[in-house]
Image 1 (tube, rainbow, N blue to C red):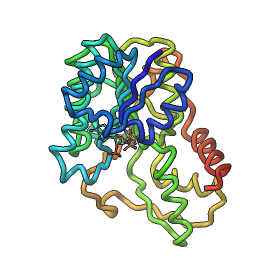
Image 2: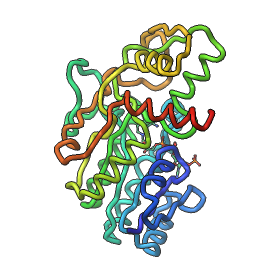
Image 3: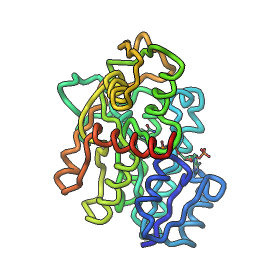
Image 4: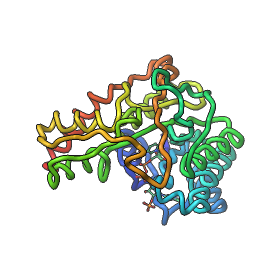
Length: 283
Ligand SMILES: NC(=O)c1ccc[n+]([C@@H]2O[C@H](COP(=O)([O-])OP(=O)(O)OC[C@H]3O[C@@H](n4cnc5c(N)ncnc54)[C@H](OP(=O)(O)O)[C@@H]3O)[C@@H](O)[C@H]2O)c1
């Protein structure tokens, strides 16, 4: 299978490349293919004629996005639109990644969000990602949109940050009123691969690791698994101000993926595997 991967130097892209390495992969970074350039996308996709396009390109700096709305819209909305048009013209399947931030996150944490629940993004990042989803739905039929959350993997990420902080501080303050599913990029890549292999129906799928936690509880789990003796102090989002508003409830139901037999590990299992890999590398 010929697979074009855009944004191929990103965190998820690295996991996707590893997961799909048995295929013919054409990997492009922004210098090779800028997804906001409509003509370049049409030309490139027309020449390569991939079976699948996996769009790992995005503007992901949630706080910085607040000050760069036009650029963020170009990358997170116009980029996917260009890819959707090119996918349709060339009969390729488009695989795209979206986010829990398309939801408002105001719902009581006793409930989670299904794919079709009302959208109400609270900041520029989520608004532009939702616009990207809509452009894909309007411009091609053969697409998968995997909505993920709290992604970590190779490189700079929350788990690594918390471990590093514990080396310099006796205590850390972590938000305890945002609820969601930390998601290992390796497991999201596996979900994508399984969906492609099983040829599940096209559409939108919530795609995180199983189980729900808070950043505070997750940090306690990281420290306990790594035998780190650093006090974790729970704080509210109000106390931990950031430019972009984060959803309190980022809990997304995975029932739709599970219905099609996709295997999804828990976030606890995922974290153990990630830490084992990192420890093996001596990081
Ligand atoms: N990280 C999370 O917690 C999270 C949560 C929910 C959803 N997601 C979604 O998951 C997907 C993967 O995220 P990630 O964390 O792997 O992202 P990432 O590490 O930030 O990688 C994004 C990549 O896109 C590239 N890129 C930016 N603008 C581009 C353009 N115009 N054309 C081509 N490439 C461009 C970037 O290149 P440069 O670095 O050179 O700019 C970067 O390599 C994204 O769709 C993201 O929205 C992520």
